Image (cartoon, rainbow, N blue to C red; front, side, top):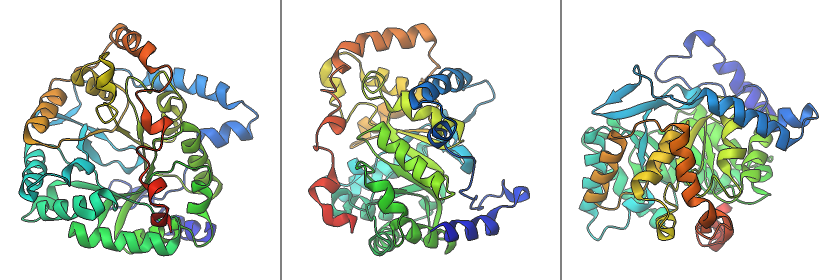
Amino acid sequence: MREAVERRFVMNNKENQRDQEDERRPNVAPVSGAQDAADGGISRRGFLGLAAASILLAHVGEESPRAEFRNGIPYRTLGRSREKVSLIGLGGYHLGNQADPQESIRIIRTGLDEGINFLDNCWDYNAGESEIRMGNALRDGYRQKAFLMSKIDGRTKAAAASQINESLRRLQTDRIDLLQFHEIIRDTDPDRVFAEGGGMEAVLEAQKAGKVRFIGFTGHKSPDIHLKMLAAGSKHGFTFDAVQMPLNVMDAHFNSFEKKVLPVLLKNDIGVLGMKPMGDHIILESKTATPVECLHYAMNLPTSVVITGCDSLPILQQALQTVRSFQPMNSSQVAALLAKTAKAAEAGQFELYKTSHRFDGTYANPQWLG
């Protein structure tokens, strides 16, 4: 495993090529914050407190007058990849269950025409139907408008390689811009991914072959497991290009990815993908925040992309209006919103992806892991 990463480093570590459009940047960088703290004898809690105070404050007011906009939609940089991505992204799960597949295609193409370029998907969404419909939507020149992300569940090399190739076929493309390990939700997942014969070997081979540009991982269960995955990468000389996690008005209070993981990603210039801004609508049931407040809170963090589900054209138009109307929130506005959600958030009852198996596809289907 380490030898594969080192070979990749030698091939790709050319600083004078870092801004070329199709460059695959080396996934070798300074040790992650979690590992750095451990090596230096600093407690994880102490490190996170310092990092949160210094790094998050440094990103306040990120949307400057020189920020890039496309058709009124803010664009941000996806971490060390240097790719420009729309502040809002279309969630893939919600794009595979419309009664008419043509409706799914209309939603995707309308989003791309309106200025969204980030598309989320996964090998297992709706038994592959989400990728199939997205692949059909990306015909007729639409692939060139999209930064395409998908995910795999395979923890073994064989399972990961098979799922990568199947995703490419369904998506009707020869490359996935960002491929992520899906549902890193178990303490054993990091070691399995990086083991001899593990999934990372297949992903690195796919990247070398030009099938994958950037590499990341996702998870919704525990920030500590995210930190373990980052530390496992550092142990093998590898740094992820992007990490996806829940970032919302409830997460800020309970077992928080924002407080524990976000500072580490910023410290290492790793792209931040925020998901579940409304907790798959469960947060809205608390009656403590509106959809616009939920989206604006997630956008106000130093996220590269906020991924949201749009299962109809009217919901897509609401999302477009929300991102176009976004203005950075000041500290008093943030504090007022968090004060409204604190009581409801304290036990995780509106974050069931953390506290139950309701959202764990690989728990119900362990065979997907390989």
